Figure 1 (cartoon, rainbow, N blue to C red):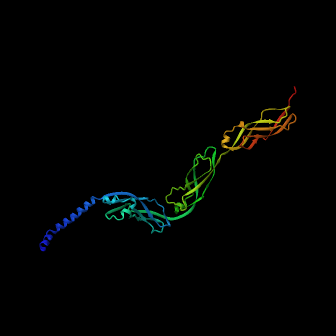
Figure 2: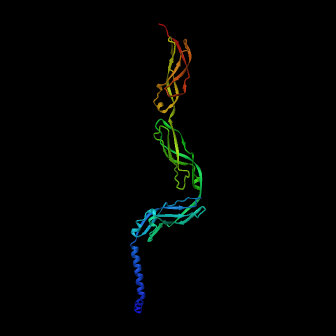
Figure 3: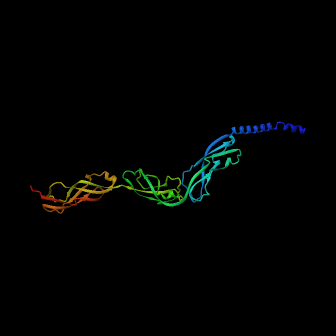
Length: 315
């Protein structure tokens, strides 16, 4: 019986082996054609020596392709695949390459029949020595306060920020700008927190990336000269009168913009005190200005006038 079975097995054995191999290939082909494929992107983690910084452009994510049964690949979340490239063994400046690897977590950790591919397969980057330096902060102001008001001064919670990054990036840094600070419509003091803003992804702020801004707002004060201000004569004896042409003057004043814009020359006067004139003749008389409340006189002309005085004739 055994001999007969052996003879049956040995008969045409090459053909039988080919049949088995063909069956296996067909099975594997069937399996392959029934596998599902899925693609998504995951963040790329770069591991480097803490004494160095990346100074070249690198991708923030990589493309992951999964191949397996539909049931398996669609239960995997993007967070279950972690992509990384390890450059931590490099302790000098230069251009280096490293493969992009992955680790499974979560639902992907225990699935055996799963193909995972990362694109790109490797990463090239440039490493540069990492340095830190204190750099002056410069607020970026836009807009204008309410009409008649102005930003008198501002205070920062800190005048400088500690910045870390590649040596070449730090050495060329003149100042650190803030986000835009809008002054539109301001008519009182104000305080806000604003972020430091640099268009360089390789720079970091170890002490924090925000600063306090205190704006001191005051009413705008302007200077203005009013011309052809009328002269008023006071305390002249009733029996006397002044002859000659009319005299006008000018007054230079300082005041708040809103008040100044509503003031005209007619609101001013120059007073000539004639109280010391006792008889007809030519007299030098001191003068002084009269101005609206809230303004401050800087200069006025003339400061004295010469007038001719005559006596009224009795009827």
